Length: 110
Image 1 (cartoon, rainbow, N blue to C red):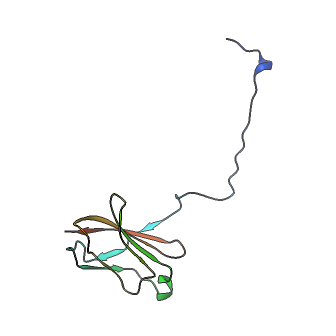
Image 2: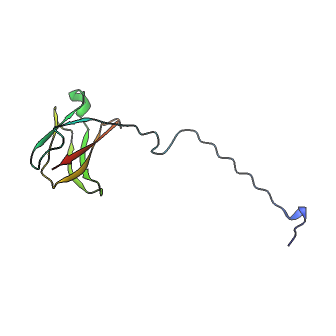
Image 3: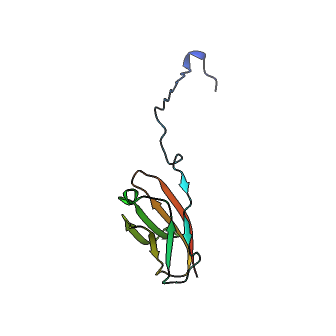
């Protein structure tokens, strides 16, 4: 079917973005987790150079690869430690500072 030129409607959409949005601008840094791997019940130390003031409002989260949370601590003390009293496997440790800076590392429990 043919349309005459008068039947064509052209729409122009102009999109302006004032600031960057989304999660693409989140930078993950890798902390040092020692001892790693560990056995169940052992304690892991998170090596990050943070002041005591930096730890205020900080969240330390450990979760299984499926996303289920196994440990969560808010405003930890120095040094940051995690008691690994969960089943053998591979876990992700995510440390989020109050300003939004994120550190993420892998923890293996034998």
